[in-house]
Length: 292
Ligand SMILES: NC(=O)C1=CN([C@@H]2O[C@H](COP(=O)(O)OP(=O)(O)OC[C@H]3O[C@@H](n4cnc5c(N)ncnc54)[C@H](OP(=O)(O)O)[C@@H]3O)[C@@H](O)[C@H]2O)C=CC1
Ligand SMILES: CC(C)CCC[C@@H](C)[C@H]1CC[C@H]2[C@@H]3C(=O)C=C4C[C@@H](O)CC[C@]4(C)[C@H]3CC[C@]12C
Image 1 (tube, rainbow, N blue to C red):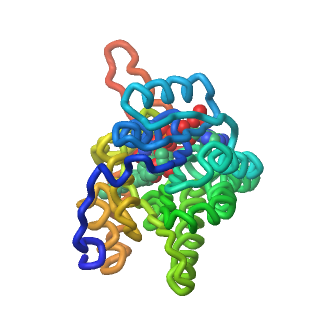
Image 2: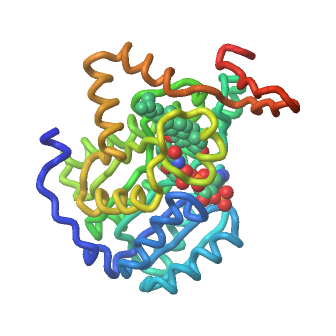
């Protein structure tokens, strides 16, 4: 508790004129981070696959007062693209202050189906591209004494069911970046690494995927996006958002892991399968988690 509640003074001016890359910024939390950064007067480079959406995000960033805004489109399934995005920042800005790694590839919310290739592909997108961007950006981040922000999930600390591939990629991020942080401290590399442990957030994609299955209420993506930027700028090691639920879960994980697991399962009511439509005159019976 002491560690994560150390004195902190965030001022939005801290981001003015800063050069920031945001991945997965065509929707959800990434899009909201781009808008906050724009409002704070940062230079933003946003990336994702869908050019039409990125075009709109860039326009909105300009309206909100970004020092500059541009996009590069492509897929992070390919680590060559990940490196290309960082090169683009180097060519346009000649440096970089903050690297926000946020994108995720599509996965399913259901029992693990045995598809090993899916996990390999998801690791490329959700994990290896993060490593590749970090490697390419590191010389610039050392120069600016900048920040690396890695967006993860409670599923990357205390997993629930139906997200085995996704959870694996988020655990990989914790292992890699928490180890790398030690090395930076040992070697006096003044680049901060912030691992963001997020609970359930109300983005369109997450709501579509799991709102029928999760009992807890989602937290707002706008506030979540601001907290991520804030903790990155303050060089915190970890962000836990929303703090009550995530800190509670992590505390229980240490004290009573079996109880936490039961609690997680009891908060997931249905999943994956279409909810049957009620026939006229009958009431719909949702499928139970045991049915498959
Ligand atoms: N929402 C939630 O409940 C939670 C989210 N998180 C984490 O927060 C982060 C953001 O989540 P959220 O905003 O909900 O996600 P969204 O699904 O809204 O956004 C994902 C972004 O990644 C992009 N993307 C998808 N596939 C690829 C690809 N192959 N290559 C490059 N970009 C890709 C998407 O754009 P496009 O399709 O155009 O490529 C989009 O911009 C993720 O790291 C997620 O794990 C953590 C805990 C809970
Ligand atoms: C026990 C409870 C107090 C809290 C349980 C919270 C659990 C159920 C929450 C916390 C993190 C959440 C997942 C997440 O990280 C990101 C995504 C990606 C998105 O595209 C689809 C939904 C998915 C898989 C979320 C599913 C629900 C999870 C596991």
